[in-house]
Length: 457
Image 1 (cartoon, rainbow, N blue to C red):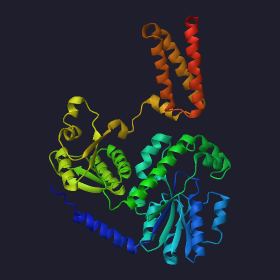
Image 2: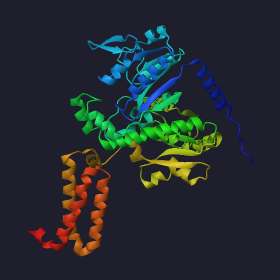
Image 3: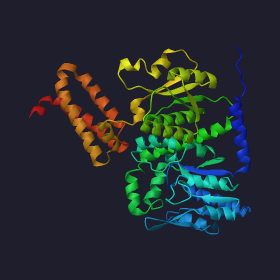
Image 4: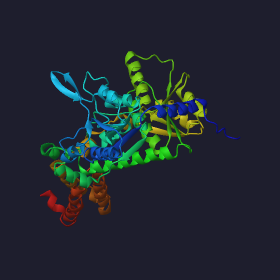
């Protein structure tokens, strides 16, 4: 059977509309980085100064210098538009003045901090909405963004850094960008800038260095930013080549948020298109469930999903039918956390038993619900003296356990106990603690081997 390779009419229409929209709107250029302080605003201002020398009409809509002298110096010679003053709770704040930009109508406007949340009383809730309005008036925009503010990356960043991300931006907004410029800096160089007071004021810099700006956090964020940028470039270059089609099943559960984020990251990794399916069964939903469902569907749209609706008796049948119609290559679904006799009749189990042309990706409930044991959370979030004390306590505990197990299990089994313990500690603690983990087990092991009875004294 010859496979029909013709474009779906709806997909073709979306492509035509997207191209037409690009022709009438301004261009969006995003200076993208792993975290504050890598030089995004600095690079944006340098690019703007270069354009001005070439005769391009460039203005500053909103720039946040954070008191950095080198950034303030680059503002000299650039036209800075006035900000709009907004009073909130008897305090006066300044926000970007959209009307001032639209009246001035420059070729390029600089807008810092793309994910910023505007003060209540502003025209839009989020700054990216301000940017969209400016783009719709055929004005080009340069802006800045950190990787942790992307919706698809929020849970991954929070889990790995133990820092709550409060300002986010839908991935679909970044997908609108005509150009993404990665501003890269090594973790060591960034920490040096932090210590020199080039990122935050000294009192704030010390606190940041011990928390969000820890080297292991910066290494993770840098890798995330590099991977995201590389995938964005691959999507642009390979747009006409084969792309995976990923379908995620959502419902009225709050877990759908995490499931959607996981599917979005997977779509970037696989250079794929993302679809979300909601199957409306006869089950009556409460007001709370209906409200959550609307939030889930809205969030799916923000991530750039194409929403597919079904009304089948069985969700598994709906997924199979839609997958065939859309040539889906991968289905993402929550793995049930119920007892085994309930799992047999779950959507995931039914899909696993039925032959299909797609790969089934089951996401464990514990992964998407964010549940974590108290011990894991303590080990992962502890720092400084707590980590040393915990390591030493666990080593002593392992030695005491070895004393009682050795007559039964033997010396080599005890060695494996030590090996397992210290490999597990490596997952939670930084490198500077591994010296303790490397030498302490040897000391206690030798001490125990030659003086087993002294532990009874």
